[in-house]
Image (tube, helix red, strand yellow):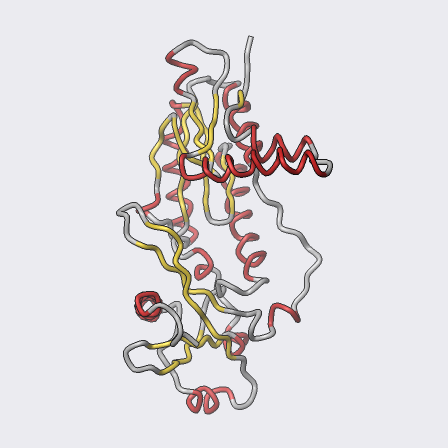
Length: 295
């Protein structure tokens, strides 16, 4: 399962698994015989693997453990017709425009849910079908763990989680008249300076009351310049220069990709039709674009 992989990656994934066991989102390690004694012949084992995903704020590598529900045959056999509505960059522009009708001194704040998928529990009757195998590099053995929350890698875990996140966003919108939306587990608030502190407070208290956890390490306090969905939004120029427009641009980490897409777009336009809407959405809009104008 993991013997051919990077030893550092395998160790990091095993350590992450042990942390989840301590938190109670995964069960203790079991052998296949122990699983059979508990569930008989009716259970499902899914292999897992690790993935390095860039670096964290301290510059250390980030790792994610993924349950391979495609390899176990679950994802290919699952189907649903419902589509998950996703927030896009232009939604943020609409939120800014709406908030600016009240006060043009616009601020942003963001919050992330901690271990988001694990906060949505599995039905206890379904735990037998969410047994994941994790490689222990110290012993060379593969241990089996029960999953108690939505597994990262199961196709239906996405809508199962997103319905909760969407409910939370709509609840805050309706109860507190708040300009808030989300992209999966990332929540962002767009409010005038005079109300954003109370909006952040209402969000945190509501999450606490409802039993959902936020990640304090990923919290971004109110500011006029904030990265959201890979785009740096900045409303400070409007205040400093009395400009009628505010702008957003690509965050530095996405600029090489946008530059590549620009060159690719030019090459494709010579060989086949390249939709103008796609070209603008993926290349020019993230570089520089007015969000709203007044007067």
